[in-house]
Length: 299
Figure (cartoon, rainbow, N blue to C red):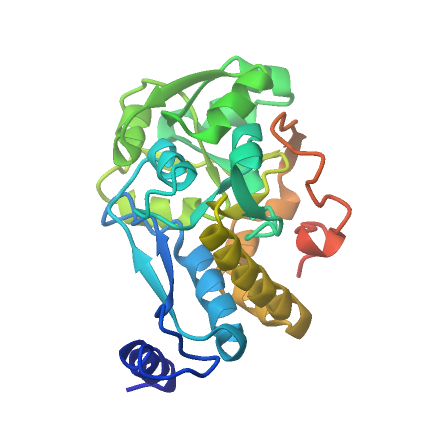
């Protein structure tokens, strides 16, 4: 058994038997997160690795923890369960919107350094030349964009003047694109390579467009219930994340999971279209430049 697994197993077992700082009568701190939406859904592996590492960094100060998947939930359902502190989920990974800012506790560190705010386009093979001719945002606004029902990006794109078609099923959105229900499925640089690799054989008409990059500030935070327990969970996770930033662990994990995507998608070399995000809070840490990806200087 690895040292990590031994540590969690032993302290979980004896949590009620010892009174040290590492073990308490209350047992391990429980972080329950949303399970993947399908067997192919690999979108959040990096993000939960960041959280797991943050909890490991605070093991000596905060003790044992459990990081557990919940049943699968939509983004809307996750927010509801967290706002009502139902216990069915205790941490959520989503972008900021005014409602969350009012009702939940965020850790104001963009988990993926805003790489989720860099979007390339999934399109149909037959439309490749059509997209090569696009020069302006107005050209893009003539197209129909597809997104999941209730996704935060829906409101952002509509705010910026785009027509958005929604679908209720994540996997079904790829089929909707191929069957011409819409023209573009915008995917963040965090997600698109894995999504394409998983589907290129079953959906050979699918194509990652090679020239266009949509960009807007999309700080993706870890969110917690606005309760005493939620504050306790958030305080520990933020403490660990700050330690990771200070000792370089954060950058190493980011490079491990995301560096290949930045280079393979050639984000620096694409035509860049900047958009606005109307959901940003005045408390968004835009001035903390070290928390945000600078695509032009990234190596």
